Amino acid sequence: SNYQAEPWKIKMVEPIRQLSRPEREAAIVQAGYNTCLLDSRDVYIDLFSDSGVNAMSDRQWAAMMVGDEAYAGSASFTRLADTVRAYYGYPEVIPTHQGRGAEHILNRMLVRPGQHCPGNMYFPSTRVHQELNGGAFHDVIIDEAHDPSTVLPFKGNVDCDKLEKLIAEVGANNIPYLALGAPVNMAGGQPVSMANIDDLRALTSEHGIPLILDAARAVENAWFIQQREAGWANASIAEILRAMCDRTDGATMSAKKDSYANIGGWLGLRDAELATQARGLVVLFEGLHTYGGMAGRDMEAVAQGIEESVAEDNIRARIQQVGYLGDRLAAAGVPVMQPIGGHCVCIDAAAFLPHIPRERFPAQALAAALYVEGGVRGVERGMISAGRDPDTGENRTPNLELVRLAIPRRVYTQAHLDVVAEAVISLWHNRDSVRGLRFVHEPRYLRFFQAHFAPV
Ligand code: F0G
Image (cartoon, rainbow, N blue to C red; front, side, top):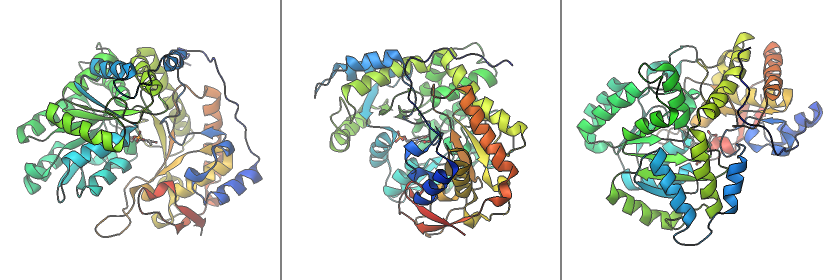
């Protein structure tokens, strides 16, 4: 095969174990059929998230030892801010404990009641922060992103016609910013092209609308631009990342993804006045503007992680591993979201379990069944994650009803991914045995994290 060996070797290991099938059956009942509520000790291969679960390098651990834990003016913050400026290019850097901390501050500053927040598909924490500030989310992603089978190189792109239509309808003054996810998590990690970012820059500039990047996995997006977009094949990942950011006014960042850190984040801005306002808020909600909820050592780990994230061989190995799992499943006939994205493989649960109606939550049921089958933990990305419409109280019914298998970076071997593939394929052959679910307990916000279910 042309599978290339990883550009690192393993220096520290963490034991994992597989429970017996009866133990797994008991564990999922205990967890209310919600993989979010499983004890991680009961999980064999954990593909719940790629966030905060990455293996740090020896360089990152070493950097943590020299973290400056000063309350004010930490040298580790200086290193972090300089690194963010160098690689992402935002002159103003406000540290936060993780991505949603940056989203909280940004939305509190920008969004007013009655305003409209366009984005290329939603991310749950982003949308809830928009809604908590009285905004209404509008999906302006291309239609194809909502279809699991259409193959497009940049399936995360914004449909500029949809955006222009929204601007014409509500007026640019009522659009506080455009949230650009690149790649798009909820669409299975689908990337956005540089051409699309160029178009968005032109359109938003014309109307005076800030363009804010969700940079959580922007390095993965840069990889797809380098591989797929004409004119970028000879640019480095670092150059492409910088070019993406240069076209935006700011970014919210979860350093728990691309940057290989267990915790951390930042808000990057160009506007000095807005940054002053953000520094005022960060003191209230996160911590002083020179640590923002991170320890000094966390800021060191993030800064070092940023440098590693743009290394071509690291990002190649990362995307290759995700593609390996996706291709194995597709080859066995398992319906997966196409094309395979950057951070996850998404199983199309509606196609996998056609006998379970949407209101019986096929993706939630499939995620629970996959845990029982192989001790593999994925997460629902469908009806449950989409939540209820705040105005009508009705369940939202997104087109995509997915089980996401997110791959942590530098954590699992190819053999682990074979175990995952075999569990999914075995379940595929026994799919008729999977039953639908109903709510037993439904939390108000981000309900997928703490909901309980029972089979019907
Ligand atoms: N934006 C995107 C695109 C994300 O994927 C996440 C987190 C956030 C923002 C929020 O960042 O967790 O640091 O507060 N995604 C994780 C996931 C939780 O599993 O997809 P955070």
